[in-house]
Length: 244
Image (cartoon, rainbow, N blue to C red; front, side, top):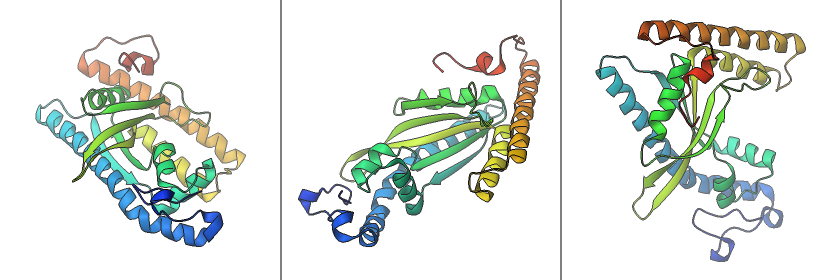
């Protein structure tokens, strides 16, 4: 396999395959080229961050309150990219990394209520220069361990000096309760190297259910404040806009 500089292929004089030159040297070449490679993802992240900031400030200015509590952008490190590439069997080639790893740039959006999660997702993806590539709705269908969040992969154009790059960005939208639980789950997974003891796993699952019930109660209170009629349907189903 070839580790190619962005915009270069083996025929253009790109580095030789890791098997031919040895993995340490190949990884050094990959690291050298990653600065330029990651720069484009940073720009894509900046574009999405700006859009969310504009939405947050505009809605706050209207006096109705913003559905966005806070935003946390994240760019994968070279070590994290390399680890994921090995885990999924992706060659350490920039073109392959670009096409197969879609969460190099990521941003977490924390909202107050379940309905806000879908409202922000809808406002963002309705913008004409934002292309929605993928939706994974773990709010409506939580993971077995209780994880809940709405994951979007969107594509945003980045205008460079010599070209326009279409950059994928992962957007994770969740409530404060979902974010608190996810943070705890991440710390436990890190501490126990993804092998959480059964007792703690059970406690974590129970905590996820408690967080879900809290979100549901808060959503009903929010509906009361807004004067919208309560529904007998599940909270997530009740607040999801058409198409989600």
